[in-house]
Image (cartoon, rainbow, N blue to C red; front, top):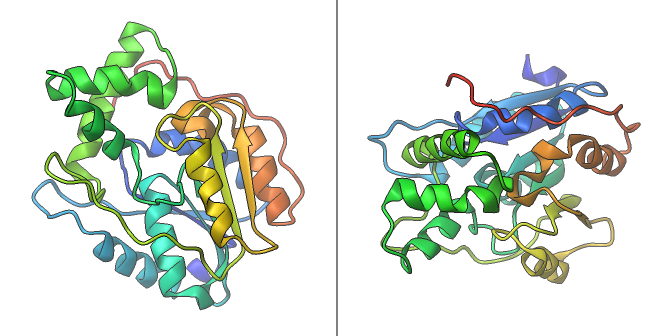
Length: 248
């Protein structure tokens, strides 16, 4: 039953959620954290509002406010929900989400695509280092295929024809924003722009490296920051995820 959980991790990608697992493993050692997933079919229109409504259907069964966490577009959905239903949120933690919260990896992809004569697969291969750092060719190929699949089912509001924006602003719940100093998607400036809407209890923290999926490569460091923000004893060390190709 959802009433027994302490935190909810919101994800919008069945293909990229594996990169959340190291951090989830760390956090789950110290409290009960549930993973909520939104997945739309390739034939459905992209809809952030549908994702927010379904997240509400899940969280409203909890008998107490919960910690809400999300990375990228999952963080965007979490932010929208925290603004819509603040009474259900104990705190909000955003990973790789700037003050312009719609700035996700797909916006990064479409921005670069307009300047180079690449097809989709070539462009995805080019941006893999921006998201995951330099990888061996076989891993880069594997990751580019995952990104291509994610594009088909993500509620990201961006397309080749337009990149959407939402009004910036904060939330009433305590807010923790985490990022990476070498993330070209959500860079230090995008994170620091949160300062305009931060309360005394809010925090911004940056990992020294790790690119856009920093929480995958440094789960221990990120978990320590989150657990400290939640006032929970820090987790024990956990090895980084293995990015070798695997079946999907």
